[in-house]
Structures are given as C-alpha cells and as structure tokens.
Image (cartoon, rainbow, N blue to C red; front, side, top):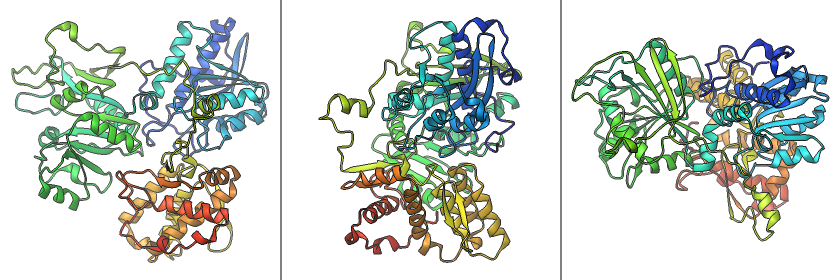
Amino acid sequence: MAHLLGGLATPLLCKPINASSSFNNNYTSASSSSLHALDSLYIKRAAELADKSAGFTAPHPNFGCVIAHPNNGGGTVVGEGYLYAEGTIPAEVQAVEAAGERCRGATAYLNMEPGDCHSNSSAVSALIKAGISRVVIGIRNPLQHLRGNAIHALRSEGLQVDVLGEDTQNKIIEEAVKSCLFVNAPLLYRAACQVPFSVLKYAMTLDGKISASSGHASWISSKKSRTRVFEMRGRSDAVIVGGNTVRRDNPRLTVRHGGSHLPRRIVLSQTLDLPEEAHIWNVSEVPTIVATQRGARRSFQKLLASKGVEVVEFDILDPRDVMGYLYDRGYLSILWECGGTLAASAISSGVIHKVHAFVAPKIIGGKNAPSPVGELGMVEMTQALELIDVCYEQIGPDILVSGFLQPVPDLTPTIPSIEETSAIDPTISPYESSIIFFYKTWDPYGGFSNFSLHPFQMPNENGELVTWSSVEHYYQAQKFVGASDPVAKSCMEEIQCAKSPEEAARIGRRIQRQQPNLVRPDWESVKIDAMYKALKCKFATYPYLNSLLLSTAGSVLVEGSPHDLFWGGGRDGEGLNYLGRLLMKLRSEFLGDSSTSQNSLLHQTSENKY
C-alpha cells in the first residue's frame, strides 16, 4: 500500500524494538507457553509500527495495529497498519484490509486505544465487522474526551478487550507498556501537563564543552550524529534557539534527511539584539517565529515582519509562557537546540521533559568555554537532576545519552471521560460554553476540520464524479482549476494523490507561492465558495457529522488556529474565522433557517494568499 514507506528513520524509542521478518512467519519461540508474552511481543510491534511516520509528517497521535492468530505454539501475523498522518486511514482499517478474511477469530493488538475523534468510529467498526474476537490495547487514550470510548464500544459488541498491564504485571508486560508510553510521549505530556513535549538536544566534548573559548563549535559531533539531529527535527512541530545561537552560529535549522515535514523555527530573544541578515529569516520554505518581550525594538520587529517573520510579544519572556502559547497552537513536540543560558532557564521552568546529549570523544578545554546548561542554582551534588529510563547508543565515534527529566505520564487509574462524568452526574454538561472551538482532528469537534478524513465525491469540470480524501485536498486543487497549462493539471493530480491533508496543503501552498501564474485568476473571489461546497458535500455525505453539527445549534463555532487569521480565529480573536462562519451558515441551511442564509459577508476578498 502507498502508506507503507520504505527507508524510514530509525525509531528514537528509549528501548528500541528489534523488528524482524519473523513477524510475518509462525512464532515457535520459547515464549509459546505464555499468552502474556505473546501479547507483549505483538504490542511492542504495534508500537514500532506506530512510530514509522515520524519525520515524514507533522507530529500526531501515533497508532499501530497488528492482527494475529496467537496460539500455544506461537502465532501468525495476518495484517499490520499504522496511521501515516493526521486525517489519513486509521491503522486498524489498514490492518483489517491487509488481513482480509483471516481476521475471523483473530486478535488485534493496538499500541493505544483508538481515537473516536468525531463520531467517526471507522477504526472500531472495522475491527467489529471483520470478525475480530479479542483486542489487546497497550495504553488507554490519554485525551479525556476519547478515553474509554473505543473500549466501551468494542465490549458492547461482545469483543474481549484487555488493556495490557491492568490485570497482570511482570517485566515483559512492563517493557511492552513502556514502549507504548514512549511512542506517544508527546501526546501523554500534552494531555497531562498542558504543554508540548519538550526535548533538549546538545552536543558536547568529553570535557563538557559546547564550543571553544572563542565560540567556535563546528563541528563537535560527527556527521552521523548530525544526521540523527535532522531526524529529531523532523519529529518536532518546532525547533527553538536563543538569540546567542542566531548571532554566533547563523543556523538554518532545516531538515535534510529526505523527510517531508519541516518544523517551524522559533527564536527566543528578550531584547531582539539580533542580526538584520540571517539564514533563519529566510521563510521561503519554512516559517520562523520570534518570541520577544513586549515593546522590544519596534523598528526591528517591522523589519522582521517585512521579511515574513512572525513576531509574538510576551509581557515577560518566560519559557513556560512560550510553551503555553505553543500548546494553544496545537503543537505536540518541541526540540530545543539552544545554548546553556536558555537551556538552564527552560529546565528551571520545568518545561524540559527529555534530554538527548551527543558526547564526542574530544577534549577542548578552556576556562571560559561554555557548557550545555548554565546556572541552575545548585550547590550540592545531591541536588543534581537525575535522568530516568536512560539509554545509550553509539553513533559513529559519538555516544548518544538519552533520558527523561520527568517520567512519561501514565494516566492510570482511569480518568473518567466527559461523557462518563456526565452519566455519573447529569447536572454536569460536557458542552456548557456558548463558544465551541475546533482545530486538530483529534479534538472533540475535530470532524469540523477541513483536515478530517472524510472522503467525498464532487463533479469535476466535465461533470464526472471525482473522489477527494478530504476537504483540504479539494480546496487546494481548486486553485488550479480551468488552467490550460498542463503543469497546472499535473499540480491538481499531485494534490489529489497526496497521502494526507497536511501534504495536500503543503503542495498547494508551495506551488501557489513559487508559481503564482498557475493559480486561477479569480481564486481570491471564489475560494470561500470552493470551501463551502466541499464542506456541504462532506456533511451531507456523513449523517453523524450532520447530527454533530446540528447539535451545536445556538453556539458560535470558532476554528481555533492561532496563526491562520483568515480561516481561523487567531490567538486573541483577531482572526476572521471564515471556516467557523461557513459551518454556522451550513448549520442554518440544514436547520432550514433561511433568515440566516445571507452570505454577503462570506464573499469578502482577502489579502491572505493561502
């Protein structure tokens, strides 16, 4: 299948899982007498599969599924799958399709409870309809509005559902559960701590220096280690550096390992004492955000804005406030590649969860040569911060030491979901607010997103029905409709075949930016209608989405993207929120309220080019 890619980056799990071709053959190992051992083995395989898209797509909840027929002599794998990106085919559906009729009576192994994000139970339905008899789940879904829903749905249909480790504990099970926690650590930290998962990365010499006394640092680590850093960046929503790094190293902070995901670059600088020319100000391929103190160097802020750099002001530039802001933007994972001063501030603020330290077999010396972490205020060795779940890996001549500063949150015992709480106490309403926000597809109202996986059919210019994987696929392709240039038609085909809504958006935006002559001349006046037609078709195709939309009657719908000021509501409500407006218009149309059908507001033009 197209979603199964070869040549993917090695998973950066703290306890690496050694996959082999034996997963596709009969197991006849010494563990044949223990069902728990087989369960643990298959769950670890599901966790490994879940990690496969890392670096190729924006960070998202990682799901893997293995379907097997375990028995006293071992077992046989009949189907596998993993979620490639937000808004793509669920892992369970892929595994069921691969296994076919061999699903009957089989056991499905899932690293994490499926996310019934938007009344779309395709993952659960696939397992039920395929005849799966037992489901083993590594960990429950950490998102409160999803937690327990899939387990309840499967059990209500008569399937046996076991959550690994909740009834029996041993070393093998503990290791399997840990692999599930590691592969979704960003989601778990986000759910438990309300901040993105933050990883501090640095390279140092054997005597603990990150540069010579002169500031020269190219290169401490080997080329193989630097390649691994590119992979780490690809696993992140954003890469953070401080002003000193920009001034001293002039970094690009790009991803050069062949993956398609490009993380945003973020610079933290209180005073904006930054160079006017720097590689990081080139935003032609990837955006840059500068976080600074309110009122700092207004003239320089204008200069950055003229280059396309986004400037975000904070009353006090504190790492925890910045992480709260990035949490609101929906980010899951952040990589810190800063110097010692900012690293110490981030650690002291409690926002660093994991450390990757590349140690090179070199000695540079120097009384004034900087170290990876600045002053933490500790005066006794007993105050030192100890890493947990530490692992060591040799990369060329270097040693990579990785470990957690804070344990990965294990959200057991079960936290009741909103629905469960409401059932216990009917006076508690899950949706009391008159404003309903939606953004990521795994949010409670994620089905409203133009990135949600809801394929639909729309007629093309010739009246022939064409299937689109998502609203975003359709919307991006419409930019090039009607053009006689064969390149434009090729662009439409490339967008239609994109593996995920994220990739469709990236392709459409890139072509629009680099080859504006291919974009239809009336795009600015028709793009709202294009989005509305696609939304209407999607909600008319799926009755449960229609019902979900109608259930919001009386509430204001706001697309929660803080950086899209056209389709989204913006960080502080300054956005135009056209996606929310279109959905409210569609809701009124479905409710038959003709009085709200006036759409003059929805035909305004915008300077927004994406």
